[in-house]
Length: 343
Image (cartoon, rainbow, N blue to C red):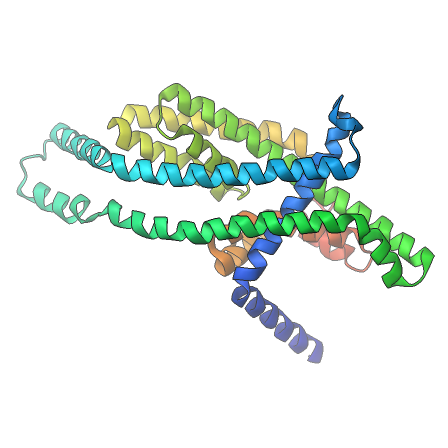
């Protein structure tokens, strides 16, 4: 009874600390995940003809510079697209109004006395421009968070070189320290491999989605493809949201249901191909979470940190399970949280 009370109190305290410490912990966790991806990418560069001859610190530095450039370009992409959306909103509103009017005519309700009242109570009440102001104001916090992620990642990568020596000193005994380093190496390798492969899969999904959106002439195709790639970190829900946004935009851009349906079907086919064919073959045994654990992790982290928490939920949970799987005392917990029990 006393142990259960202590465990409950500790869980509540940790949850409160995670919630209250969101401004500090969120960039730190994002930076840790980024470091795993960057380190695995740097190690993979050994297979390249010229870059593979560089020393490890040079490869990590090169990857870090590339990561910083990508973050800056991402921030610029978001700003430019928000500004362009604000400028083109009147045309979108006109297309949507015409679409609704045409369908009302087909249904034969355009002359009904209640139609004008219905439109006035729905579409006329939606002020999309008012949503842009908070979005533009939130860019400041978004930019600060991205800067902190790059800053923390650079320090974490710099610390990797001395981590082994620090572990040896902390353990006090050479044999114990060597076993601890081997354990950390296995954990880091599995976490890094999972996150790197998942990121590559998301990039492939984003590239395929970009080709589809470009083929249909959807505006802001690059922005939507990047968003689809990021949302794919969220299982189940992320794929659905990634399809909905471009479909709604195609509806507002062209004002036809046929175009929106074509975009939805094509993007769904791409999502199915990546989820059921490409991802199982590339991920191997690294992704082995129980569906209930996935939903529970999404509910927990999204409640604490919103959309950023939903994006980090599965990478954080998978990393934690991989750590549990390498420790004898916590391995049963990892088995219970897995989908098949095989780790």
